[in-house]
Length: 587
Image 1 (cartoon, rainbow, N blue to C red):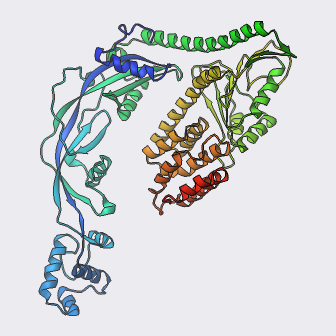
Image 2 (cartoon, rainbow, N blue to C red; image 1 turned 120 degrees about the vertical axis):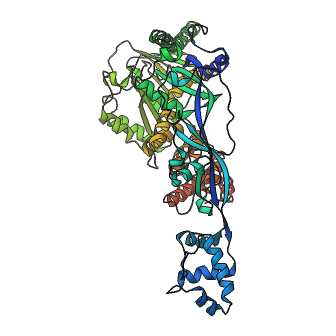
Image 3 (tube, rainbow, N blue to C red; image 1 turned 180 degrees about the horizontal axis):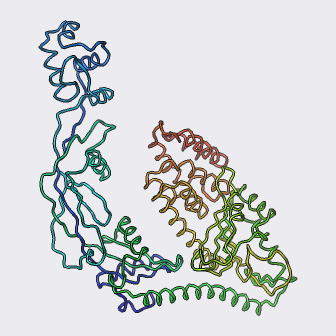
């Protein structure tokens, strides 16, 4: 971004992709981009599969008799009961024994496998074999299965293993347990092992030796100015390899990767680029504030109009000293759906009982509150961090449905002091919104109350992007640890940003349907403030997800209750929309 792109260690054929990455956000800068090769292991495997078929009348009677008769009958005894020639009984039991449905010896007893099939109204068909390829990936440390084999190609690129200590010990597929093979086949998306349908991989064998297959990957070193964070990203084409990227990021954080050796990126170059980007970010913030000041000054010259201690300048009002705190409260009271506050510091002088009561009143009527704080570049370096008691009191503000309505996060590395309400009103200036001493004595402070739409949106886009990035980071952490608390914080933050669709998409993509009751609570807050349209298409998408939930799931009752609450909330203002949803196949 700041260094000449030709001075950066960026491979020529990656420059276009680098431009696309940097275009995603003005805070991103690709410091290095190189291509490598690395080897996968491919092992041909043959798996045997059993599938069910409906049993016939005689098979059903024999299996049922073997289960229910006490003591279990022999073939001759069963033939006598049925009045049939024992030859017919023996022919059928021979077939059932060959399918491992009946035990090998008399009297007739049903195997566990046979009982499982019987409960589904079927017996297994003779097994058949399928040829697969087990692919061992040292970067992701995973084994996947696929039907088509990978082609062996020559790739004239540096070997990643020469720069990074990757464990190239390839797993011996033949040494794996059958259960692990079944699990990996399922995870690979192959419809070959579906126990609930009676389709089972019963055995496997390696049919040829392992083959080394070279793959081409791209490695990017990306600096995010908002997060003040260096990230290593691995891609195959444009697809981000999340697991491989995470693994290399850990190795880098542990000091086990040399970026100088890996991509000729020195610490001096990293620090130079980092400081240049951060300086530009602060310059952008100051430029935005200066634009507001200049516009106010120019209009003041034109109008020369003063009302009391306020200087009215079109859609910008300059506030001074003791008037600031009251204007802050007035603006908060006007909120209908969203309040965003960034204050470098937060203390109990402001976050007192009166202020907390105001936030609770806002929460009750459907307003979300996002609070960002922090001025140091690292959280551990904050000299005046928010106290746990204050943070706990803020997080105790709940929506009427019991969700945390105030999301308060350390975002850091910013001295901006801004308040944005409903994306319509912007307060900015020198006032520490959540950490002044609580007095009203003049200190020469000034704040601008701005309602100029494009300036409010410019400020909103900048600060909302920081919260959005933080929500995404929380979500990734919640997925890695299956931490529902972090997941709820992400969902509430997305809800506060009007991104309920993103929240639903993440729940769907990551098959975390247990979070659907929480998502419905998030939408109830949006409906309450009328910020979420009653006829939003996301409710139809949510309904399709409800139909995927088994009635045996423990959260089904809660899910049904939340769905009814959403329907009732929609029906208050839009009965026909609610009726249309009810007429759709629901849970």
